[in-house]
Image (cartoon, rainbow, N blue to C red; front, side, top):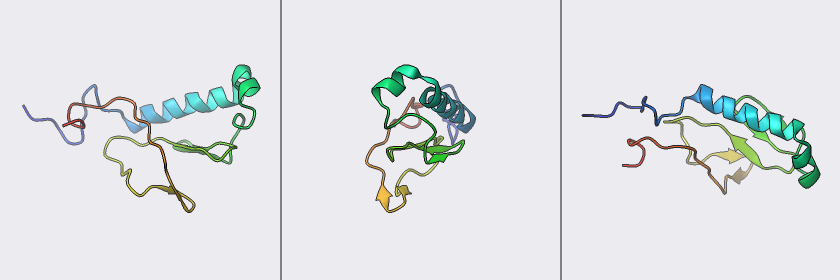
Length: 95
C-alpha cells in the first residue's frame, strides 16, 4: 500500500488545524493571568499577529506550517530560526 503525497491520513496536520493551534496560543498570550505574572515580557499582543505567524513582544516567532510547506531557509528579518517544534508526524514523514 502506498501513502498519498502529501499525507492526508490521521497523521497529516492540515493548515486550518495549525491555525487553530496558533489561535489557542494567541488566546493564552492575551488572556492567561498566570502567564502574564510569570512572563510579563512575552504576554500580550505581539509585534506581528497574523493567522499563520506571530512575533512575541520579546522577538520570538511562532509560525504555523503544514505538511509539505518549506522549512529550510526560513527567516525573520535577517535572522534564521534557531528552533523548530513539530506536533505529530505521519508515517510518510518519518521514513
